[in-house]
Image 1 (cartoon, one colour):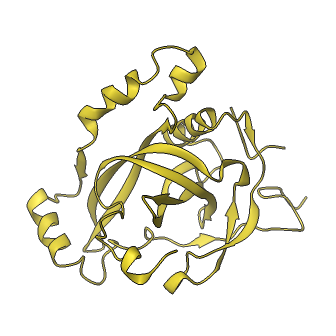
Image 2: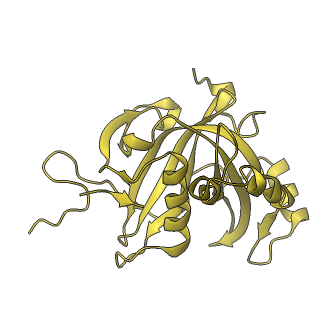
Length: 226
């Protein structure tokens, strides 16, 4: 059964560090560990623990590959499938539990890691998205696409074996795009960021909503008890 077919210092991880991904753009990154998370509602998403120019961080929760009812999420599963093609994989094995330094103050934390996609070098396009939830400004780093690290090829270019790098050049027109939802404005967000994302917002944390940890050892991830 396949899961899916088709040194850090305080100053370095501080929000706004020069190599910390905090804005829309195309970034050369190494995916250190893709982490599987299951929401309280039952949807499955992939967080990316990655490194960008020596800076490590987690891109949380927006690469959703299945919905609450277990059906594939069309957008997220398509982007994840493209990552698999870029990594030259036909299938990804079920996740394995690892201790990663992603807790508070780099504390080790158990995570369900897709080992087949660990240590993969890619270009990652991020588009910032701002909105409002329960009266607080929210901030998301939305994954828009992947490109092969060695030659900037898209998944489509790899499969077709032609026009390598054309899609990457075309993507340049979108790299500075930002999404403003719920009536937020660029001016409002600029003030909020300058104030260091005031307490109570989602600016430097995982998106709101609880998650349940996948089970390990006794059964495969996603397998029913029956």
